[in-house]
Image 1 (cartoon, helix red, strand yellow):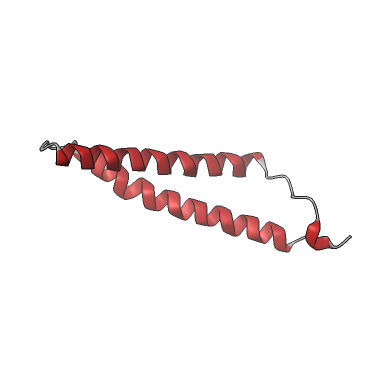
Image 2 (cartoon, rainbow, N blue to C red):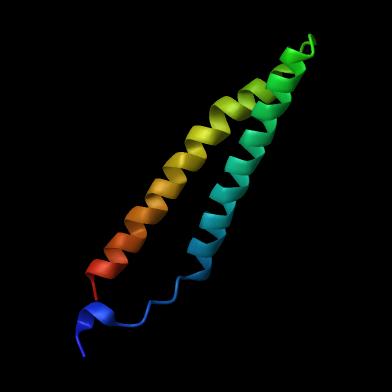
Length: 79
C-alpha cells in the first residue's frame, strides 16, 4: 500500500482546543457584526464593543485557522 493513502494522524488535545477557539471566535465576531448591522439598519446606535469584537476577533480567527491549516499540512508532509 502506498504511503499516500495512510490513515490520518491523531491531532493533539492542544490543537483541538486551538481549533475550537478559532471557530468560537469567528462565530462570536460574526454574531457581533450581525448585531451591529441590524442595529444600524433599525436606526439605533450599537455598543462600540461590538465593533471592536468584530474588528479584532474575525481577523484573529482567520489567522488562527490559517495556522491550523499550515500545521496540518506540515503533519501530512512528515508521513
